[in-house]
Image (cartoon, helix red, strand yellow):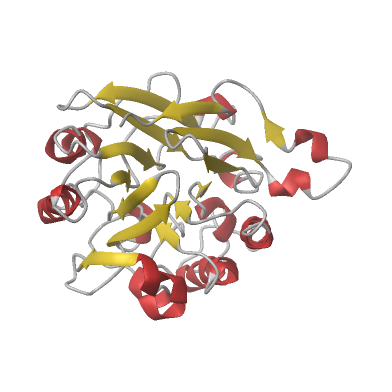
Length: 323
C-alpha cells in the first residue's frame, strides 16, 4: 500500500499542483512493480471546500480549482487501484468545517473508479444524508496475509459512524479480518504523540481520544490506525510525523501512525510537501509491515536521487501485527 499525507499544500497553489500529479503518476507507474493493492490518503484534499475569495498569503486557487486539481491528480489511479481518502477538516464547510457540507461526493462518486466496485463492501451516508465514500470499508485478500479490511471515516466522525465501523469489523463476516482504520484527525505530531482530545471546530463530534475509547480499543481486530491533520510549520520532518503503539482491550498491539508533510518544502506557503509519501510493504511473513518514506520528486532526477529515501528511525521502521 502507498500512503499519501494531506495534499492541500499542493492543490492550493497552481505552481505546486504538478508535484501531487507527479506523486500519483509515480504510483500508477509502479503498481505492478511494487504490487500496490491500495492507496491511502489522510485527507484535506483542498485548503477550503467552498470559497471564492482568494487570500494570496495562503492560496491562489478557488475551492473549485483545488477540487479539480485533486480530482485530476487522483484520476491517474482510476480503474487501476483503489484509493481510499479520509476527508479532513478543510474538505468540509466553507473554509474549515463550519458545517458538514463537502464537495467530495461530487468529485469522487463510486462510479469514477472501477476498482472501488470490486473492493468496497460497505458505506454509510455522510452528514448530509448523501451516499458517499467518506465513510466506507474496502476488503482485500492476500495469500500470506489473509483477509484485510480498510475502514475510512469522515472528519471527527459521528457516533453513528463509529457504531457502524464497530459493528462491521466485529461481524461474523469480518471478525477474522485484520482491520486498518484511517481517519483524518487522531494523533498529535512529533515526539509528544498524544491522541487529540480537543479542537476548535464546529464539527466537534468525536476527536482522537473519543475514537480510541469508543471504537479502537474495544474492537480486537483493528490493528492499525492511520491519520494526518497535525503538522508543525517549522519544517523539521520529525515534527510532522508520529507513531505510537498501545494494547487494546484484547491485549493486542494497535499501531498508530500520523503522516502529514505539507509544511516541508518551505513551510505553510511552501511547495506542499516535497513529494514525500510512505510505502507500506506487507512482508511475506504475514505479520510485518515495513514502512519506508520516499519522494518521487527527488527520485525522478539523477542529481537529487540520493535524497529520495529518508532513513531516520521515524522514517523507516517495522510494525508487527499480532495474530
